[in-house]
Amino acid sequence: MHTITKSLVTSKMIRQGIRRLKQVAPSVRAMSSQANLTSLNADNEGIAVLTLQRPPVNSLNLDLLQEISKSLDEVSKNKFRALILTSASPTVFSAGLDIMEMYKPDMKRAELFWTTLQEVWLKLFEASYITAAAINGHAPAGGCLLATSCEYRAMVSGKYTIGLNETALGIVAPVWFMGSLCNTVPSREAELALTTGKLFTVDEALKVSLIDDVATDKEDAINKCKEFIKKFNRIPPLARAVTKQKYRASTTQWLKDNRKADVAEFLGFLSNPKIQQSLEMYIQSLKQKAK
Image (cartoon, one colour):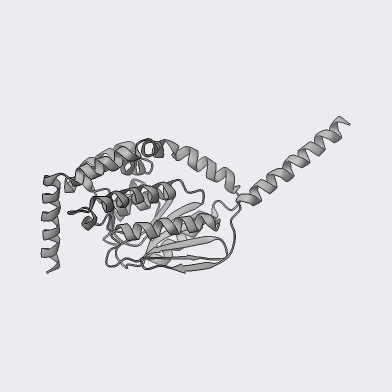
């Protein structure tokens, strides 16, 4: 009798486990949505592709960040199993934060800009679904932040660079920017890269594990991302998601505990006349290069 009872209990536990897995399994259906600055397309396998399409270089302004945030919500809402982040530009993944959001800013908009960036990072870095980046061009600063927020990165070969180069511009990367890099490359490499504002070539990025693979073109990069996603075909989604979030918790905790202080620091940075002068000089240099 004891054996029969134990068998029934075990069977019940298995059925309950299956039901729980079904609850977190992806909704496998195709979808497509088009916004002004992004597009989101998903296939029948539950893999969504989010494409940044703000020409010329996908600079992250408030409008683009808001669209990215909405797209990430859409992926969660539809319970897709994975997201691939890429760019419509043939040579730039994302050039990073839009400097015009910081030059002589309206402070209310600047505050919304920064809080939206915080939200995008937290949503992407802690996503329960699988995340991968098909990096088809340059990815400095904020572009690198988006890429390192993902679990896997395939970068197209060529004369492209990736890294957090803030110090080279006289700027200090926020703690959570640093955390994304430190979560990706060895600690010593991260410190050197951050303090020198290093931009890695594709080959250099591969050597330090800043990227996981090199692709021949964008299509190949997306296919490599899909191959990475397939690694989890036999892994229960809930176990994978919770493990990822627990592993990354120490990186996100600082921002969760200090969001208001982080915003105040950013606004204080923008209020500094010397910073505004540096931004103006940088903008003028860009205009000269464009001539």
